[in-house]
Image (cartoon, rainbow, N blue to C red; front, top):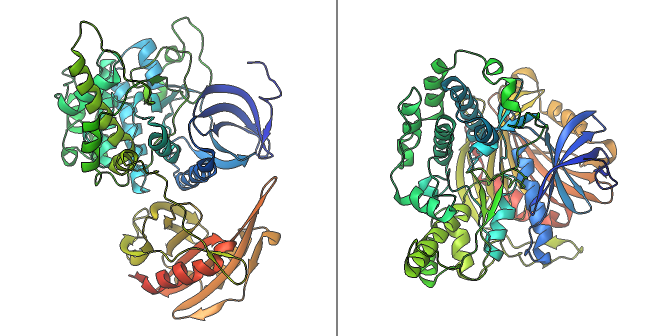
Length: 578
C-alpha cells in the first residue's frame, strides 16, 4: 500500500504508522516503526464502536487502556507481546509485537488439516501460553484458530488477550451488539455460566479438533444462531480416530471440572511431536493457493452481522440468570475484517434492527422466532455475562454510575467512602515462593489482577486491585528475603526514585510506622499535550526477612479522600504471613 500523510503519521512521538494491515468498526491495525527503539511493531488504533454515547466515550477509552496496562505484564514465548499503550488526540493505541505469520485459520482454509505432529506442536504452544495467562489471573476467553499465529521460523503464538473487554461490554449494553465465536465458545458460557479458565480448555480442544479435522466442531451451515444452539444442546462431536482424539475428547467435556489440565495436555502431546516446529511448518504453508507469499500481519478475523430482537420471554429469562457471570473475565480484542473469505471462527456482531424474515422451506415462523430468541439470550449471556444482560433488559447502563463528588475546603474532589470487602490472596503464586498469603479489605467492585514481576530485588508477584473507573489502584508485592541482602528499606526507596524522571517525582519525608515506613509521593506523567499527576501512599513493612510493599495510587484531586477512605482503612485491614 503506497504511503500517504495519514499512514505515515507519528503516534505518541515515536510510532511511525506505515501501512494498514486491517480495519473495522472496532479499530485499525497498522504496520508501524518504533523510531525510538528502531524496530517494527504492530499498532492497534482503538476506536469507540458506533452507537456509543459521547458521554461514555472517554470512560471507555480509559478503561481500555487500564486493561491493556494490566495485560502488558504477561510475557511468554508463545504469547504476542504487548509493548506499550499510548494516547494520541484522545484515541488509545496499543503497541504490540509484529510477527511475520499466518493464522491457523488461514492455514486450514488454504491447505487443509494439519498433520498429527503439526497439531501437537500447535497444541503444546497454545497450552503453554494459556498456563502463563491463567497463572497471571488472565482468561483469554476466545481461543480459536484465528487467534493462533504460526511464523515461518517455527514460532507459534497466541494473540488477543483481553484488550476490548470494556468496549464490547458497553457495546452490548447500549446497542445490543453481541461478540463471540460460536463455533468455539464453551457450552457453559453459551448457556449463561461464568467465564473461568476452564472455558479456555474447551477452546483449546475445539481448536485442536479443527486442526486435525479441517473444520470446527460446530458449524450449522455458517448460521451463528444455529451453531450456538448446537453447542448448548447438541452432543459433543467426536474427532476421527487418531493419536490426538483422546486429548481432544478430554478437553471438550461439557462439565468444566471434568476437563484435563493444561499440564496434562502438554504431557500427552509432547510424545507426538518428534520434530521442531521449524521443520514441521514448511514454506509452502505461508503461501496462498495462487502462489503469492503472505505479508507479515497479526491475523484479522472476518465478521458477520446478525439482525435480531429480544423477545419478551427471553428478557424475563435473562433477569432470572442475572447472578451468573458477574465477572466475565477479560474479552479478547476484536479483530478487524479482511478481504479473505470468512473463516468458520467468525466474531459475531448483533445489532438490534427489525426481526428477520423466516426462511422459506426450512422451518415455521414460530420455530424461527423461538430459536432466534433462545440463541440471542445464550449469546448475550456468554459475551457479557448475566450482569450485563440483566442491566440491559432493565434499561440500566453497564458502566457503573459516577459517584457523587464531595466538595472540600481546598477545592479538591472527594468520592464517597467505598464499602470494603474482605479478600485473601497469595503474593507468591506466580513465583512459587512460600509465605505469601495475605488478607485485606478491598473496596467493593474493584477488579483483581495478579502478575509476576522482576526487579533488582528478585522475582516477585504483584497483586493489584483496580477501581471500576480505572483511576485508583491498590498494589501489594512481597520481596522475599529482601532483608537477607539489605539492612533496611532504604535500598528500595533509592530504587523507587530511579523509576521516575527527577522533574516528575516528588517524595515527602518518610514517616515511621509499626514494623516499617510510610511514604507519600507524587508523580507526573507528561504526554505530548497533557500531563497527569498522581499521588501514591505506600507502606514498606518488614515481616521476617521479607519486605512487603503496600500502596494506593490515585489522581491528586482525590488525594484526601483516597488517604482517608482507602489507604488508611485498607492498610489497617492488611494481614500478612511473613
